[in-house]
Length: 96
Image (tube, rainbow, N blue to C red; front, side, top):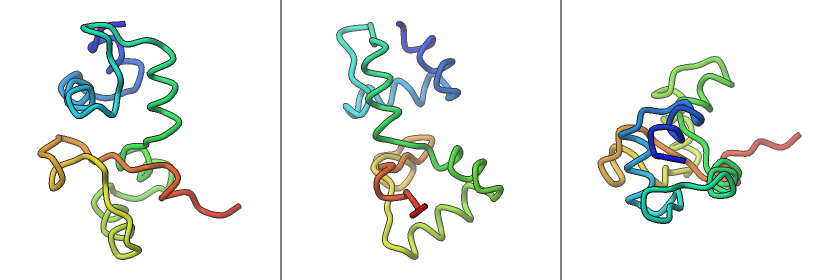
């Protein structure tokens, strides 16, 4: 798949998807990204926007709460200049 197709599938802007590829969080072989790569990415990372939507709050509020608990994004505005914050799912998982 192309970066644009992957962005659509993940519900993010293509610039965000391209940034994730450049950072090595989303694996690509040249200009192509496989379904397996998307699955690995989705299993390992989650966006702050998605987390906030699931919790019914704003991304900023959620990210502030996560930071207070010691959880930092692996990619995003203050980490590497990315347009959207992404977190490791394992670090934001709640019990139950």
